[in-house]
Picture 1: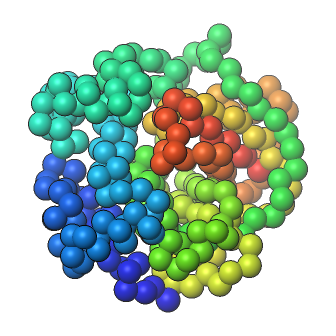
Picture 2: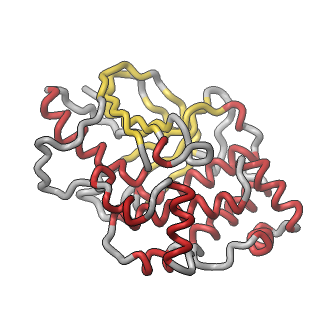
Picture 3: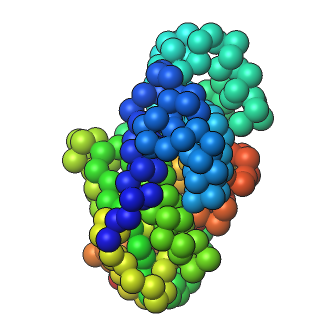
Length: 277
């Protein structure tokens, strides 16, 4: 069952996501958690692995990266929406997190998901292997809404795992996706944010999800999560028809070989796994 510290941390994470332009100072977040400023700092860091300030910076930068890739809004509008007072402050923060300017990031076509009838001839290729994946038991938090916002569920999952003292027992971070964004309204998209957990009890609000063993096509994607749509387009639009393989009646999932908490966005490695019949 959820304990008191889980609830406190989840309140804080929800508050950060819901108020990117608001006051996200340590004092405010401690008030949301109903903990003293001193104790809140120590509890948050111990249970999530990063400080509250680091979490705020990471979430704001990720929100900006998604806006840059998915939309055409001017930098001034993105700055305001993501909690940066000026374009200059967005530039500085984005360069610190992503190692490039927002303008350069937006221009990198490899990060941009392809439009529906895009001619894929000569487009970027990604390494794809066919291999047997093991059965996996996941401890998950459900997410409904845009897949680009599943980080919200992962924040809650990490806080819950930390509050229960299970951090040393979990394996890979994995996300499972049940719909196709091209034919499902964003508000109806369903997914699970999970950690591999072999034996420990999985109690609410955590949900158990089991991924069966079997043959999978595994695409390796290097780079920011905001660009993963390009990997899916290649896997389903180019590789699948050329391979002669048939997808199984099971959802695709992503395995994260590292995380934004300890890795620069350009160095992130994600495996997109497609179950095969």
